Image (cartoon, rainbow, N blue to C red):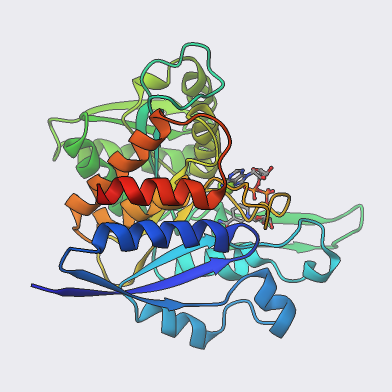
Length: 349
Ligand code: NAI
Ligand code: MG
């Protein structure tokens, strides 16, 4: 039985093309003798494209990308502070637009401290949790505005949008995930202060919990969650939270589990109405771009998430195992391509 997967590939800027090159290398290696073929379409998007054409993401780009089965993205964004990119807003015009238009309501960010990886914690214990971050609502929807800009009387509003529909679907996803893992779900919010949104999140979690009697439910305020992520990260299994809290917590999570070079993510539309998008958490790292210093592991682990999402669980497990083995045997500096080659070789062994 042969299966064809149409994959949109967005290498992007800076180290994006370097790490995506290695991720595709590993994808090709793991599917070499399987019945699955990935038909890849490259898309030139990001700061480079904006500087060339003035476009960030056109309707045609969006329609073309949406016709694929899945998306692999490197990183987009130019050198921070580049005056030529002042009006571009690649983050909102490209990344957030893709997430919103393709209804990526689950932003999935696993954090695992792999044996051999070194993080900043002296006694980290076992760390293996997943943050399920709501991806289409919260303060990121652009529901706001400003008046009297630049004057002492300026008013700036950024209103967080939380719908019962949007919260329930992501909460349900998080419970189902916890049921497949270690049966623990932690809601993170700030219900003591953000009483309207927080109250609704809490009520919805409590209601959905009754459908998942095997899952233990726990609640933490976001400030307390940052303490436990450092002092006792082993207490977490699945964390469900809103768009903003999830953004912040996952950078912290990445830091305690060995760094940004290892953190992978999926922007998922679980309904399958639109293609899901997989990308390393890191950005385009202009400071090391072109020097083969980037660690492609985060991009390669994003391929594992992609394979898993497509139901190719054997292939996903092979990629994850190859990465684990590679991390366990790391010593000395290697180039981006050397790391990719080593993991691709392990995948085929
Ligand atoms: P960044 O993640 O690109 O870099 C932060 C630091 O981490 C830098 O010192 C960089 O060298 C290092 N780093 C990042 N990825 C690495 C890797 N794979 N291996 C080794 N070191 C790595 O974040 P920064 O500097 O804030 O942003 C740079 C550009 O990337 C900006 O234009 C920003 O807007 C964009 N960006 C894009 C994202 C995306 O495409 N999803 C996410 C975050 C930032
Ligand atoms: Mg972030």
